[in-house]
Figure 1 (cartoon, rainbow, N blue to C red):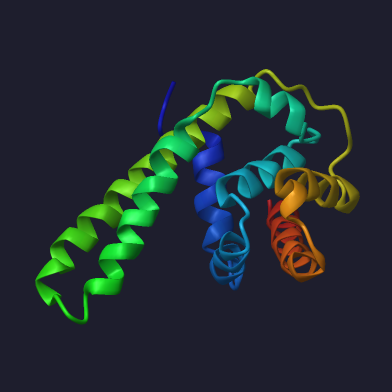
Figure 2 (figure 1 turned 45 degrees about the vertical axis):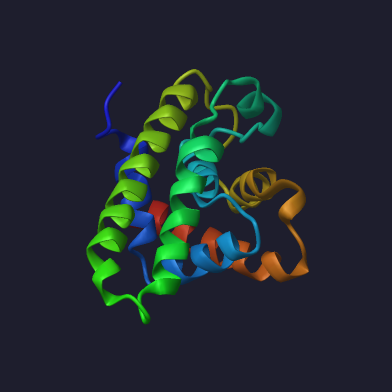
Length: 161
């Protein structure tokens, strides 16, 4: 396994596209798991359908047990920065720890995705399907526009290759 893998590089590239970071943060605020959304986009770019049931069959507890709690602590520290500016170094360290946890999460997702075979042509419909599957029950009309924005950015990324 490698922390530097194609999924990680894809996620960094897509996340750096104009508007994608803000879109992802808004989706995260609405309960979506951003790494799974980016994983879904990567799968679509490979012609692979996202299968939520197959993903849940794996014993991947990293996100709920490590990444999400780190993010929650970082948010609590961030709330204290105005009253306690000395906490800035702690906040930066937590931000770095969260990024490292996310990279490891991407490695686990990439490892799992290696066993999924292409079964479809890369298409707008595949991106839409994958994002809806990754979003799951968290999808609503409010998230629909954000998912469409992420889908558009991911499709442009494929077209640029």
